Image: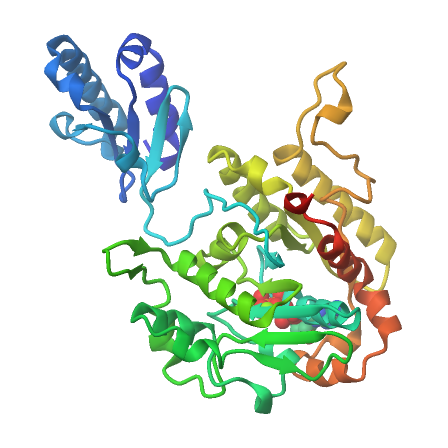
Length: 430
Ligand SMILES: Nc1ncnc2c1ncn2[C@@H]1O[C@H](COP(=O)(O)OP(=O)(O)OP(=O)(O)O)[C@@H](O)[C@H]1O
Ligand SMILES: [Mg+2]
């Protein structure tokens, strides 16, 4: 028995015990940090001899069937008064009639999604694979939106590999502090000491404003020591607990009220990573750009994530925020490569995200898009490769003298797509 066989086995074992499940108000399948299974049931069941006999029999079956992923029968059943505390602070999802709670040794919450903000719209630049041109596209999009008159707040959330800010700011304009400083100061209730000095405006925009929040300040200081603490939850005076992503959201809200941006662009970390999960699922972004190269690593990675969203049942909350961004299409055979990318993206979305339309049903009632529908979330907002953009160190200077026509040609679909999203009235305001 290995990890992936465990839940199907538990499901099979429980399926033949309908009577017991009906008699219990609830049951939670607890998968612990080591991947071992125990069951949590209501306290009341321990007072009923018949029920207890059934549970003991179930515990022995689990012990013998689950092998190393089971627990000794006398430790496999736990009694609790209420179900809610058992599920608190851990991903959980239904498995037929019961609920699975998954204890993970990670701060990432890929299986839970916060509602989109009603404040300035937040756009996350994410990619499953690194090095695909995400930060460059973000910097150019910020420039584009600012040229059109917007106030754009840019956050460099790629804390473990910072770099975005130097594409928008020359080193001399970098503020004294950055995101890691705020997160560490906030642990001791001192966030306000740095909040005023963690944003710099870029001189690249004449019409609107680009306001950059870097990962670290002018002098990064003890960056590694600070980074190792950003995940810490904070405790308030009443002993309440605020997770790190909630602290981060509080930081953004603070910056938002101070700087009044029209839009917030967030450069996420890539991969199935804890910072990325905060950016994608916790920071209340209404648009999450999924950068994609047409390669096996990209499609496999996104399907792993989408399968988890399906399992944890957040897919309906997530899917309407997603948009594929085509990463750096080559300058030869561009049209063909675009079509291939679009088809692969359609395969991915159809398999995991789009509703299946039953024969004879009204198509409009389902969330489903045609392969060639330009308004579909799988239809790539493509960025084109160009040699002028290959050296990121010079991007700041490149943007300083950039020709808007070239930006439109290389980044147009992406920049215009974001602009449409930003200027669309939010549902909450209608
Ligand atoms: N449109 C483009 N045309 C040509 N080269 C590009 C383009 N966009 C980005 N690049 C180059 O590709 C490399 C990676 O770009 P970038 O740093 O923006 O990617 P990233 O996805 O943010 O990477 P990371 O995952 O490391 O943060 C850089 O050298 C950059 O100059
Ligand atoms: Mg980057």
